[in-house]
Length: 119
Image (cartoon, rainbow, N blue to C red):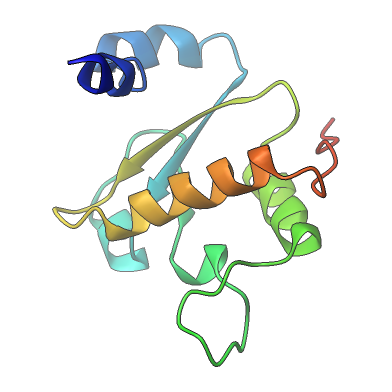
Protein backbone atom coordinates (compact mmCIF):
# COMPACT_ATOMS: atom_id res chain seq x y z
CA UNK A 1 0.00 0.00 0.00
CA UNK A 2 2.83 2.41 0.76
CA UNK A 3 4.31 1.94 -2.72
CA UNK A 4 0.98 2.67 -4.35
CA UNK A 5 0.56 5.87 -2.35
CA UNK A 6 4.10 7.00 -3.15
CA UNK A 7 3.54 6.40 -6.85
CA UNK A 8 0.20 8.20 -6.75
CA UNK A 9 1.95 11.38 -5.59
CA UNK A 10 3.77 11.40 -8.94
CA UNK A 11 0.51 11.66 -10.86
CA UNK A 12 -1.26 14.90 -11.76
CA UNK A 13 -4.76 15.63 -12.97
CA UNK A 14 -5.67 17.60 -16.09
CA UNK A 15 -7.07 20.32 -13.83
CA UNK A 16 -3.81 20.58 -11.89
CA UNK A 17 -1.82 20.78 -15.10
CA UNK A 18 -4.04 23.48 -16.56
CA UNK A 19 -3.67 25.64 -13.43
CA UNK A 20 0.06 25.04 -12.97
CA UNK A 21 0.85 25.73 -16.63
CA UNK A 22 -0.22 29.33 -16.05
CA UNK A 23 2.64 29.80 -13.58
CA UNK A 24 5.24 29.26 -16.30
CA UNK A 25 7.52 26.86 -14.43
CA UNK A 26 6.04 23.63 -15.80
CA UNK A 27 7.46 21.91 -18.86
CA UNK A 28 5.31 19.23 -20.44
CA UNK A 29 7.07 16.44 -22.32
CA UNK A 30 5.11 14.36 -24.82
CA UNK A 31 7.01 11.06 -24.83
CA UNK A 32 6.48 9.19 -28.07
CA UNK A 33 6.95 9.43 -31.81
CA UNK A 34 6.69 12.40 -34.13
CA UNK A 35 3.60 10.73 -35.61
CA UNK A 36 1.90 10.54 -32.20
CA UNK A 37 2.82 14.17 -31.55
CA UNK A 38 1.46 15.33 -34.92
CA UNK A 39 -1.80 13.47 -34.30
CA UNK A 40 -2.37 15.40 -31.10
CA UNK A 41 -0.64 16.58 -27.96
CA UNK A 42 -1.24 18.73 -24.89
CA UNK A 43 -0.92 22.42 -25.75
CA UNK A 44 2.64 23.57 -25.10
CA UNK A 45 4.05 20.05 -24.84
CA UNK A 46 7.47 19.34 -26.32
CA UNK A 47 8.21 16.12 -28.17
CA UNK A 48 10.71 13.70 -26.64
CA UNK A 49 11.56 10.46 -28.43
CA UNK A 50 13.55 7.40 -27.34
CA UNK A 51 16.43 8.67 -29.45
CA UNK A 52 16.46 11.90 -27.43
CA UNK A 53 17.17 10.02 -24.19
CA UNK A 54 19.71 7.58 -25.59
CA UNK A 55 23.39 7.77 -26.42
CA UNK A 56 23.80 8.53 -30.14
CA UNK A 57 25.33 5.84 -32.34
CA UNK A 58 25.69 3.36 -29.47
CA UNK A 59 26.03 -0.36 -30.15
CA UNK A 60 23.79 -0.93 -27.15
CA UNK A 61 20.12 -0.19 -27.55
CA UNK A 62 19.08 2.75 -25.40
CA UNK A 63 22.41 3.33 -23.68
CA UNK A 64 22.22 6.22 -21.19
CA UNK A 65 23.30 9.52 -22.77
CA UNK A 66 26.19 11.52 -21.33
CA UNK A 67 25.60 14.25 -18.76
CA UNK A 68 26.62 16.87 -21.32
CA UNK A 69 24.15 15.60 -23.90
CA UNK A 70 21.34 15.42 -21.34
CA UNK A 71 22.05 18.97 -20.16
CA UNK A 72 21.84 20.19 -23.76
CA UNK A 73 18.61 18.30 -24.42
CA UNK A 74 17.10 19.59 -21.19
CA UNK A 75 17.96 23.15 -22.21
CA UNK A 76 16.32 22.54 -25.61
CA UNK A 77 13.15 21.35 -23.87
CA UNK A 78 13.16 24.38 -21.54
CA UNK A 79 14.03 22.41 -18.41
CA UNK A 80 16.06 24.24 -15.78
CA UNK A 81 16.88 24.01 -12.08
CA UNK A 82 13.52 25.39 -10.98
CA UNK A 83 11.37 23.72 -13.61
CA UNK A 84 8.72 21.16 -12.79
CA UNK A 85 8.45 18.50 -15.49
CA UNK A 86 5.36 16.55 -16.50
CA UNK A 87 5.96 13.53 -18.73
CA UNK A 88 3.11 11.74 -20.45
CA UNK A 89 2.89 8.88 -22.92
CA UNK A 90 1.86 10.01 -26.39
CA UNK A 91 0.31 6.64 -27.21
CA UNK A 92 -0.92 3.48 -25.53
CA UNK A 93 2.71 2.33 -25.23
CA UNK A 94 4.41 3.77 -22.16
CA UNK A 95 7.93 2.65 -23.11
CA UNK A 96 9.17 6.11 -24.10
CA UNK A 97 7.55 7.88 -21.14
CA UNK A 98 9.07 5.31 -18.78
CA UNK A 99 12.50 5.78 -20.32
CA UNK A 100 12.24 9.59 -20.11
CA UNK A 101 11.28 9.38 -16.43
CA UNK A 102 14.05 6.84 -15.73
CA UNK A 103 16.65 9.04 -17.47
CA UNK A 104 15.62 12.12 -15.51
CA UNK A 105 15.64 10.10 -12.28
CA UNK A 106 19.08 8.63 -13.07
CA UNK A 107 20.65 12.02 -13.68
CA UNK A 108 18.92 13.67 -10.71
CA UNK A 109 20.57 11.09 -8.41
CA UNK A 110 23.99 11.29 -10.05
CA UNK A 111 26.62 13.38 -8.28
CA UNK A 112 28.35 13.81 -11.66
CA UNK A 113 25.44 15.80 -13.08
CA UNK A 114 25.80 19.45 -12.07
CA UNK A 115 22.71 21.66 -11.99
CA UNK A 116 21.22 22.73 -15.30
CA UNK A 117 21.33 26.50 -15.73
CA UNK A 118 18.42 27.75 -17.81
CA UNK A 119 17.38 31.36 -18.16
